[in-house]
Each structure stands twice: as C-alpha cells, then as structure tokens.
Image (cartoon, rainbow, N blue to C red):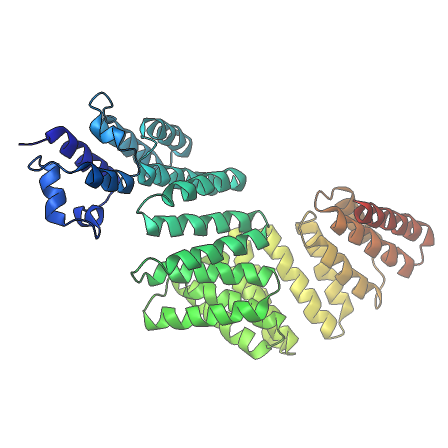
Length: 428
C-alpha cells in the first residue's frame, strides 16, 4: 500500500461530484490508474495531483494536508434524504429548512450537490408561487452547476430561470435564459427529446409574448415534428396550444383552428381541465374570426360549462366576453351587452377589464348601457390595482361611454383623469 489517505479522499470527492473514474481520468490518465490511486496501490505525481484536484474543483492542498478532513458524508446524505422526504410528502417549508441544513453541511467545492440543493429549493419556491425567490435559487444553482459535471441539471436550471422570469412577466429575460439553455443543451452529447422540447416550447411561448410570432412558429413547428418522430407526446398539447395562439396573431386562422383543436383533443384525453378550458376559449376566438359563429358559440358555451365545473370565475368571465364578441359580430348588441355585464359581475378585477370596457363601448354604439352596468365599471375602476397604463385606458373608455350616453359631466371627469395618468407615465 502506498497512500490510502490520498486515494480515499479522491474517491470520496469523485463520488460526491457524481463522477465516474473514466470522467476523472479524462484524456490524461486511464481509468485503471485512477482506480489504483483510490485503492492506495500507487502514488500519483505532484503534476498528476494538480490535474486531479482541478477536476475535483478543489485546491491540491486539500488532497495532501491530512489535517484538512472531508466533511461527514453520512451526515450530509442523511440531511439530503430528510429534505427529499419532506419535499415528496408536501412539507415544503420543512423541506426548505432541511435543504438549508444540507447546504451548510455541503463543502464549498462540491458544486454538483450544492447545485442540486439550490435547484430543489428553487422548485419549492416556484411551487409556492414565490417566483422572485425561486429565481434567486435557480440562478445560484446555475452558478454552482456551471462548475460541476452535472451538465443536464445545469440546462434544467437555466430553463427554470427562464420559467421564473416568464411567470413575473419578464419575457425578454425569459427568452434569454431559454436561449442559453438551448445552447447548453447542444453540449450534452446525448439526446433527451423531452428536455429539448421543454426548452423549445418555453422559448416559443416567451417569443409569442414578445410578439415575435414568426420566430416562435418556426421553433414550435420543429419541436412538434420532433415530438412526433420520437413519440414524445407529453408536451404535444402545450406546443399545439401556443402555435394556435401564434397563428391567430399572424391571422392564419385555419392553422390556428387546426393546432388549437389538436391541443383541445390532447387536454381532453389526459383530463387536464384547466388547459382544456384555455384551449376552448382560444378555439372559440379562432372560429369567430373566420365567421363560424354557430361553432364558436358551441365551443364558448362548453367553455362556460368547464369553467363552472372548475369554479373558475375569471375564465367564466372570459367566456362571456367571447360570447359578447360573437353576438356583436352578428349585430345582436342586446345579447352582447348581457354577456359583458355578466363578465364584470364575475370578475371585476380581471386583468382584461380595460379590453372589456372597449367591448362595452362597442355595445353602447347600438344599445343604451344600463346605469347598474356603468356602476359596475365605475367600481372596477375605483378598485383597480393593475398597471397605471391600464387604469388610464379604463378612464378613457369610461369617458367615451358617458359621452355616448349623453352625460358630458362624468365623461369629462374620466377623460381628465385619463389624460393626467398618461402624462404621469410619459414623465416617468
């Protein structure tokens, strides 16, 4: 035996970093040579130790200094096991505490394990809808994993950085993270169709929100074909769903209808009612835009039923607004008005309220607006907590509504407030 302490340290560090002997050997050594070192059957040269230490992400002194011992790996493994159990059983706050303890016990050079812990913490915060904290955790995981050999987890962490930005409405930053994940995926050296389609579908979604529809369509259609060829259908519905939205924005309505119908069929088969509802609402819109009014009504009515079963008032309100648009296109302003009124009653704080006031304005050009409906809009305006620009639009539309109803005094009040808000936005 030559030096079992050095060999033991190298083996422990290699295993902690989840490296094989071949990976540690690289092109400088053989797997057999690493095995002999770990068993203490041979003593590596100082130059060899320098190479090995670099691959283990630590200073060479830690391999040679007997006073610098490795952390208690059994303790760390136990802490990680407890954290994973808390997470799997839904004790998310306990899991965060457990992962924090594991992180404290994890050596600074063990980038793979530290990255995994931070990655898990990010997922907990994401599940808790604390996207800001999740973003911090995922970015920290990226920093750690970039220094490890866990390339696939590094790609996943980049993808989750993008998802966190997306959920906070930071679509440009989201796009950048997904593009970085896509570039990193190209270095994996192995094919993981599910991971690739996940990145592409997320990137396509971010691009759609940035109104870069042509680019989004190209990426998503390629991803859809790839998922078909590899029988990777888990993301099939999502990809079709986003494509439907993009084709609608590009005014390619037959393609929008085709893709959204595919998404609807997929969500129905897997019984994902929330996404099924979203697809129903989109399909009703596409059908209306090609003047398939009867079909659009049927689909929108189904969306109402689905929303009722889910007790999703926001989506139920959206269905009423879509029915209002259908009736307006059919020159039935009275029925359209009844659906707009129901939407305001169901979801007065909905993010689309500014658009709904425009729909109400269209109704006002053909039928009188009841006082109680205007009162509902007034209340929605007074209680608005969304972006100031949207509030300015609501005031502007209310001003036009009162003007059309022959009430110039109230019209001037709202139009003045709208002008003041727009000026404030311009000056900031």
